[in-house]
Length: 114
Image (cartoon, rainbow, N blue to C red; front, side, top):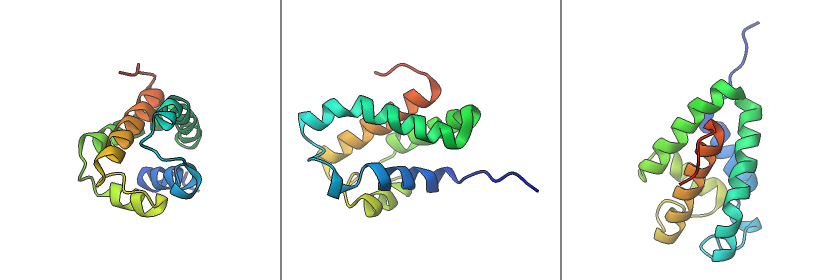
């Protein structure tokens, strides 16, 4: 039987839908939420590493960095729909999403945060 590898895009959407849903978050553009980002990113990275393993986590980090570098990435509307937050179209929310994607990626590959 062939080993099943989860789709990174599907798992990214699942992670955001489960842990970054607008119904369960404070205003993401506040300083209070900004203070939660390092911990939330670390928890997301831990969950994603558990799914993908260490090698897959490094690849996933690259995918997240690519998303952070491209506001037009086709996965961002799917995340927005799943979370009910316009992460990629609302300027203040995009700043939060960019930092969150970068922080998760840094945690996944063991890099340091900027």
